Image (cartoon, rainbow, N blue to C red; front, side):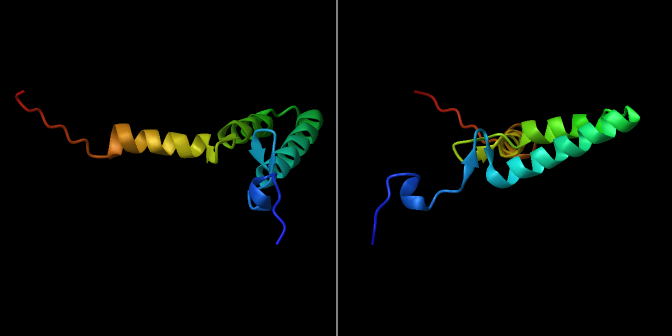
Length: 88
């Protein structure tokens, strides 16, 4: 069996800049469609949605911004915090 040095013996997911390859293809298609819609009708909502999708799917160290926001909401709002104070 051959061992490859990059990326992690060819078992890592494909990434392109800050996005996974699937998210990057979806983002490119959304930008293309939103550009056509904006040029034909002047509506900027699809471009804003594509921009939001692009920001929320930024991936760093196998975690996306959406995952991080979910963890933050779970920690600060919905998860139970347990604190215990003891005398020294």
